[in-house]
Amino acid sequence: MLRRMYAGLGLITILFGYMGVFVPDAQAIPAFSRKYDVSCNTCHVPSFPKLNDFGNRFRDSGYQMDSDDDLPTGLHMGYWPVSLRTSVGYQLGSINRLAVGNPATSQVGASTGGFGFTILDILAFGTIMKDVSYGVIYTPGLGSAGFGTGRSDGDLEVAFVRLNNMMGTSLLNVKVGKYELDLPFSEKRSPTLNTNFVMYHYRSGTPFSRVTANPIGNRQYGNANDFALGDNQPGLELFGTKDIELVNGTFRYSLNVVSSNVTNVAGSGGGRALQFYGHATQSFGGFGIVDGQRIGVFGMFGRAPTAANPAISGGDPTGTGEQSRTFSRFGVDFSLTALSKVNVFGAYMIAHDSADLFRSQGIANAQASRWNGGFVQVDYNFITPAVVYYRFDWIRNNFQGDPTFDRKFGNVESHTVAARYHLYQSKRTAVSLHGEFSNTKTTKTGAFGEDQTARVGFVGMDLAF
Image 1 (cartoon, rainbow, N blue to C red):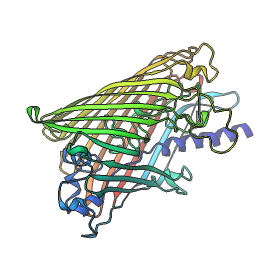
Image 2: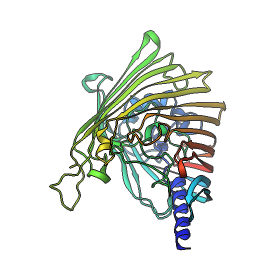
Image 3: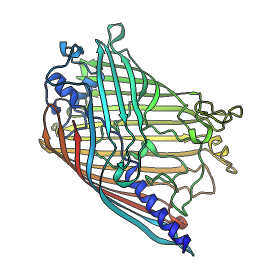
Image 4: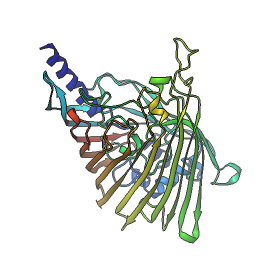
């Protein structure tokens, strides 16, 4: 009886973790509307937070419009350089193929639902002086965030300073601090609230089920590399843009040196090696979000620590991990537009984790893991205040780090549909009605090696003020 009771409690914990923990941080900044006396749609496509072409250029220029209003010379029109963002509504979810009972059976799942709210983002972006910009996002600890998942931890998600137009050219800008990498598409700007891009977070050996712990009875194997492209990283970025009149487009590049002190913190205490990420794009006939087309390439070379420093005993060992082993990520991305209403964008990536990342976890005959994955999303702004979305995410494993696991273990297929209606906007606030549903299947991750399906739905309001 006790065993079944504990199993039931475990199911509830797993499911609520699935529903609430993976809600991404997001960026929408009405403070800029107040500062420049413009509407939210000046920088965003209808129904924030996705940026339009002008908004992307404004961000790339360091939050400057080359006017007197760029300078923080005082408060006006009720302007203060801070914005808030959260979402409220009703969320439900389910997951199947959980091994419970005695004897264990796989024909058991769990489902739940309830009213609640996501985490709260407190955002401040702007300029300190001409060509010196900054960004800060603080997420406070909350006692009941995430639709009943329990207390959330507070953190400074973003904190950076950027020097713009160094040596008088837009090709040379330097950012230092903690920030989001220049990804093929920003997860923080995604209008899908519950479904992160799988490619940015997939980890060899761990089932992608949006939970904080492995479901009861399900299999997984260790991997010292927990680096995720979608997570904000501490580092230094060299960034630049150049408008190319010949193709009526923009060339962009981003080169990053990233610290590994937040990689494998739970296992080694985090490392002290440097990692490298880069992304370059070229657009034609516009920026490639509302008008024109865009193509790009990106890549990551990293080193994850696999062992704790034996000289450290007690205290905080962050940044002392040793025996770093390599991994890589390389891919291509694109963005296509039509009629200034349809945007089709996506990315494809090939990933490699070296065998030592698994050998260090005690896996006999460990080998390098290789997988590929990506996403394709279609956004359709069919009427001015409304946008509908569809996204397909996938992961395909070629080699497992633990050769005893099936090659298809952990494969992912995820479908997401969403719709947003921009209900109200002013220079102080923005409110969007939001509906979203996702269906995610993972291969051979459930009890007794069966496939698992998880579903999450949400209906509510997204608020920025």
